[in-house]
Length: 413
Image 1 (cartoon, rainbow, N blue to C red):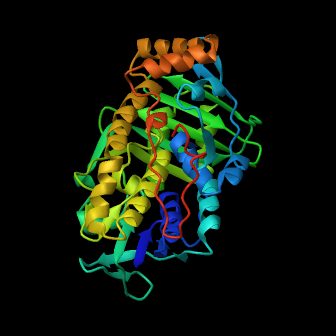
Image 2 (image 1 turned 180 degrees about the horizontal axis):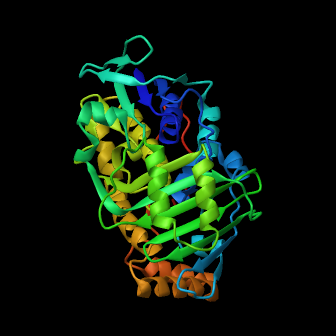
């Protein structure tokens, strides 16, 4: 059975790994000319995704490439004393098992793990998909596939071709994210330092294995901004409009972002589709159910979604009419809760007023003072879903080759 996956970032290679393990013939097509090493930004893997990483045999390289962020220092635009926080305490409130890693490093690890068993085609893109599975490409020859899966991100080409225009399914949750690769002039190694204000936050972080650093900007606006997602010059203009009067190191970071060729800018937008599947086509990760970049745990959700989709296809012997509905039913609650979590996180990271900024400052100080066990207990008792990811229970899917994921790896999942 031949399966085509569009997208070679995170969800695509994870899905390919499990599909090949179940006996399927898998091809991955990626628009980029090679595995991406363009700077990227840090992403979080929480317990269920970490369990899957371990089952894939990729735990060692993932931990070797972890950013190792240990300290967060935040200055406040209202003049309050800077807050310094142990990241172990903060992340421990969210998950018992966690790793932060640069997205491009994670993508490269998954690609290296699968390249010998998966047919990767770089520098090409799908142009059409028929209901019968006939696919045409920008450069390659047409081919027929039993199934086509879009793992090509928030601005998914597969989703556009099969389901319709992106704007039909997006819900803007009021904020924007920008990331740029910049010189590490503060000498940050495992530290995040930044500035928090009303409706905006800017920060910079570095890691031992990174020669440069990343500048991160988060900001809220009352209405959506007018720009195209590929118009980088306009995006940099908008960033300066919203941070041009900020203090701390922000002026220098804006200058460096202007010069940086590795720049990312996007709205914090959720995808809300009634179904992620149509005929022989389905979507996985941000292409189908992005809860919001940077605030919804979308990378962990993508890893889990890829694992579940492959597992259901294997369990149904490739019968998509049974596997796709089972996949959506298995993952649906996680997706819905991630959306709620993302909306709350966006509000918390960018307070909408002076009182909210004061409360965020005080909350960070409180995390530092409380015993770690008490912080975890408080997080577990909240109604906001802080421990969302650790509440997810992974199914065990037996592969056709007879290998079943170790029960030891899935304890407490």
